[in-house]
Image (cartoon, rainbow, N blue to C red; front, top):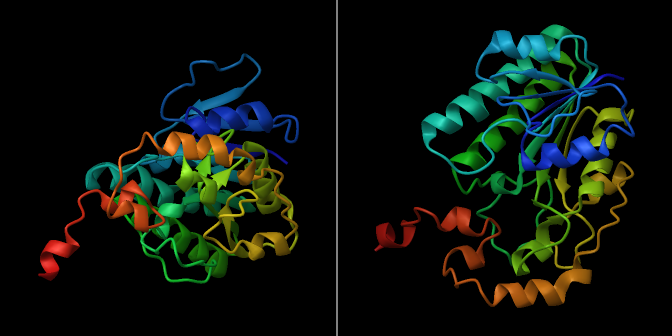
Amino acid sequence: MKILVTGAAGGIGTRLRQLLPAIYPDIRWSDLRKPDDLKPNEEFIQADLANLDEVEKIVEGVDGIIHLGGFSVEGSWETILSANIIGCRNMYEAAYRAGVKRVVFASSNHAVGFYPRTQKIGVDVTVRPDSRYGVSKAFGEAMGALYADKHGLRVTCLRIGNFGDEPIDVRRLSIWLKPEDLVQLCRIGLEHPGIHFEIFYGASNNAAAWWDNSNAVKFGYKPVGVGEDFRASAEAAQKNIKPDPVGDKLQGGTYPSAEYDADKRAR
C-alpha cells in the first residue's frame, strides 16, 4: 500500500513522519512548504492544495491518503476558503479521479465545538462548528460522505481533539490524543474492510471525555493513552490560565469565545 500524507510540515505531520514509516514503508509526503528536517530517503512533493493540477500530481499512484493538510487554526475567511475548503474539495476530487481507494480526513473537535461540556456527544449529532476553521472541517466531513456514497471512496473522518504527548490543561484531559493512538485510528481508516464512511473522535482513553467514541471501538480501536495519568500536571497548568466566561462552558474552548457577541445581540 502506497500512502500519501498531506500536511507533512505541520505538527501532526512531523510526528507521523517518525511513526508511520515502520508501518507503511512506501509513503509520499506533501505540504505547501518543504519540512526543515526532511530526510534523504523521504519522498516529498511540494503542492498547493488550492491548485487542482498540483493535487492531482501528488495523489497519482497512491492507494490511500491521510489528509492533514490545510490551515490548522482559525483564520480569515479568505485563508480558510482557499486552504481548507477549496483545497479539501481538490483532494477528494483528485483522489476520485486517480482511483485512490481510501481517505483518512483530519477533521476536528471544532466541528462540534459549540456543544456544552456538560453534554456527552456521539458522532451522530448535528455539527455545531465554533469557528470558520470548524466550518471547514464540517465541510470536509460532508464532502467525504458525498464521495463515499456517490463514488465509492472509503472515507474515515477523525475529529481530532488535542494531539500531543500529554494533556496540557484541564480541557485537554477530556480531548487528549496520544500520537500512537492517532496512528491506530489512521490504520483503521486505511485497512479495515468494513469502512465505507465513518466518523471517529480522535481521542485517547480519557475518563473526563465529552465524546462517545464507541463507533471507533466497534472497528477495533483500543487507545493506549490514559488522560487521567496527567491530571495533576494539567490542573497545575490550569491555574496559570485566565478564566474564559464563554469558552470554559463549551467544548471548543477559546474558539467559540473568540469574536463571540451572541449575548449582546440577545438583549
